[in-house]
Length: 130
Image 1 (cartoon, helix red, strand yellow):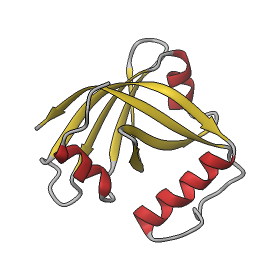
Image 2 (cartoon, rainbow, N blue to C red):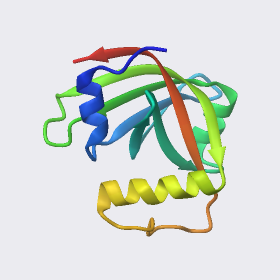
Image 3 (tube, rainbow, N blue to C red):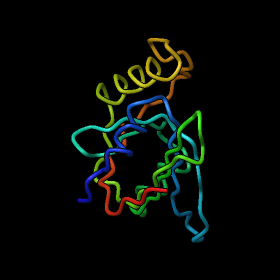
Image 4 (cartoon, rainbow, N blue to C red):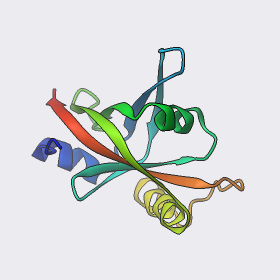
């Protein structure tokens, strides 16, 4: 596992968007911005069951991540990683509430639509600062 740099840690502490790239079945990329957090050196984010990125990650755990400073998008860190866990249930539901509070100051997450949430845990393999 690659260690996150100080710059990466700082970017993950703030409400900065993480861009997640997964591989579609036909080999093309699929990119989505998500809310994120770091836990014990692992990058985490949340998604809903049935989304394209969820299906892609279950089929192919390779993942590309890019996090940028919301005030200066040229300040960024890129991470190549692999999905090591997809957690459902109470832990995933609690995480989306935590992320909602971090990013928009609202708890609980205000846009629940009967979706089942999934907490995604990514092991960094390579970390590249810009």
